[in-house]
Length: 103
Image (tube, rainbow, N blue to C red; front, side, top):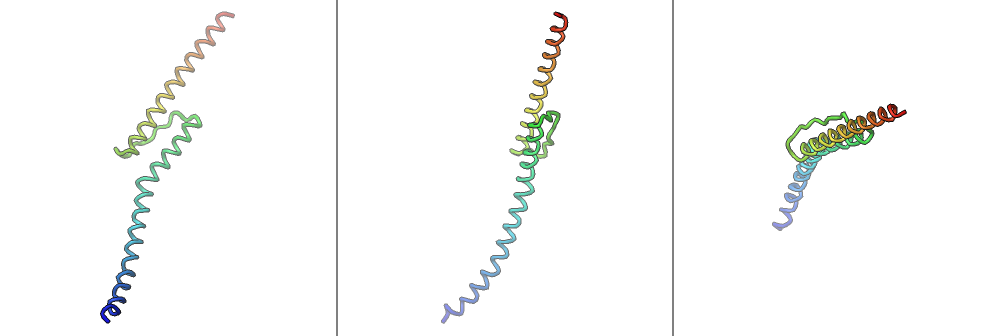
């Protein structure tokens, strides 16, 4: 008898528990989207721009966590590529001038 009386109470507790779980999962999705996925998507877009040749790109470093460190690494990579491109262009210009002088 007691078991049957307690059954509706247990069912009622389950029904109130599920909305809390849904709210928590909604919060986790929101947190994940805002703090993890958005910066990663920004880094992906930046990598695509660098791939297309936009070496003047500078990514804002919003945080000091791993995403911020990755943003800084992207900036350092773009700087190294810019310097390499300038060096190559300077070398090419010198070679072209030397070729003209030889003619």
